Length: 294
Image (cartoon, rainbow, N blue to C red; front, side, top):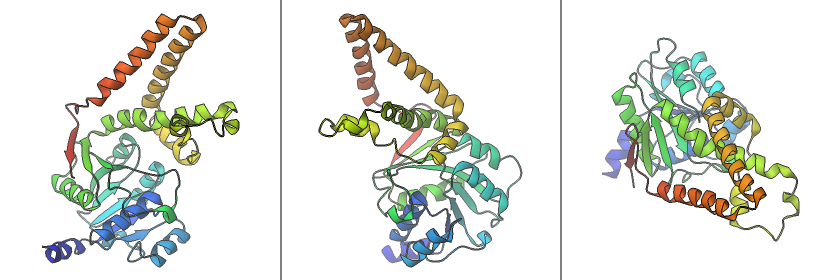
């Protein structure tokens, strides 16, 4: 069985364009599964590191040679890459960006000779760069795959198979619109809160006073502003709605504390606890499909 599987997968030519933390980890996970991914990167240093450390089997040159191209670049760079290059007729081009409506809109703005599938690996680290890539980054992670009326079923099936082979724990299928609304809340808003929380000047004197709550709140404050500013602006309506709601809830707590109204404060805190408890009994919405892979 293993030999047949390896023969099957090694016949598929795969390229990962963008050899950072996520792109490099995808290459390593694919190699672990028996594939021989090739790679491309805007800067030669990451490409050289990938070659010298066996992360990719070769440097990519002509993208018309590949059956599948994963575009592991920031959103605008991903669109520029897709528009600037030619791909094999019937190939699959899949981006890994943290916003999906923008990418989908740009990809389908004109005729294409390839099949597009939107993906978003829900994994990462506080550090970036291919030197921090690892083969097991996705082993407990979800892969979000976005679909629309243009999505080719066979291409979707191939991406789902590759997702499983890379070791992901689950696949979440939804529309680009649903993805962007969810990510604005679960990822982007959390980064905004961490960034705002750390900026009051008091964190440097907290040695010995911190526990898990402080570490969780500040862990993601140090991410790359160039990456996250672009993501925020490309999902601004969803993110701003989340920020407005959060400010309203903070003001509600502030009013109760300032007034010394313990009963009101208990009610506000109880409402938050009840929301948290309800959130633990998760049930997928009607337009979200979750497939457990492990």
